[in-house]
Length: 320
Image (cartoon, rainbow, N blue to C red; front, side):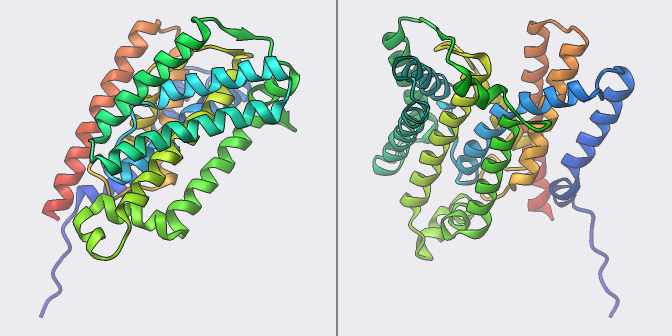
C-alpha cells in the first residue's frame, strides 16, 4: 500500500517557521532602507527598548496560554513603578523600593486571580476592573505628581551596563529563562497548556484548574511590577501616567509569536521574536521620523493582523 502524502498545513508551518521568516524579512528590509538601523548604538537601543514589553509579554503569555488575558498590565506597571520610585525617594533604600513594587504587583495579580477563580468572572472583566483600580489608586495617591531624581543605585537598573551589555537586557534574559523553565519543566506550567487547551479535560485529569489560573494571574502581576521598576529607572522618574496601552504591545508580541488567543499553545522563544518584531518596527519608524499618531495607526493595524493570523492558523490546524 502506497504511503499517503502528507498535506501541507499552514498552521503547523507558521507555528514552526513563520515568525522567524517575518522577522528575517523585516530585518533585512529595514537594514536596506536605513543605513543607521544596523549601527551598534541602534541595536543596543532596540534591545533596551524591548525589555519592558518583553517582560510584560512573559506574564501575558501565561495568561493567554491558560485561555485568559490581562488588560490591567500597563496600569499595574505604572502604579507599582511609581510607588517604587516614591519609596526610593522617601527611604533611600533600594531593596525596600524593589520589594514594594513586586509585592503590590503580586497583590494585583492575586486580586485578578481570586475573582477569576472564586467567582468565575471572565478575565476580561476582572482585569479591566483591576486596571481601573490601579489607575484610580495611583492617581489619587500621587495627585498626578511625578517623582524624579531617584539616585544612581535605582537608575542603574534601567540605564546601567555590565561590560557592553545593558543591565536591563540581563534582567530580561533572566525573566525569559524563568518563564521558559516554568512553562517547560514544572507541573503547573504544563497544567497551563492543558487548561487552555481543554479546561474540562484538564479538570477530569486531576489538574487543579483554579491554582493554575491563579498562578498565571499572579505571575502576570509580578511581571508588570518588574517592568514598572525597569521603566521608571530608565526614565529616572516615577510617572503615574506612564506606559498607557503597553499591554497591547505585549499581547501583540505574544500573538505574533504564535500563541493562540484560544489558549493551549505557545512558546516563550517565539514570543521573544514577537517582541523583537514590535521593537524593530517602532525603532525603524523613529529612524524614519514617522510621527507618533501614524505610529499608533501602524501598531493598531499590527494588532488586527496578529488576531487575523491567529484565527487563520487555528482554522488551518483544525482542517489538518
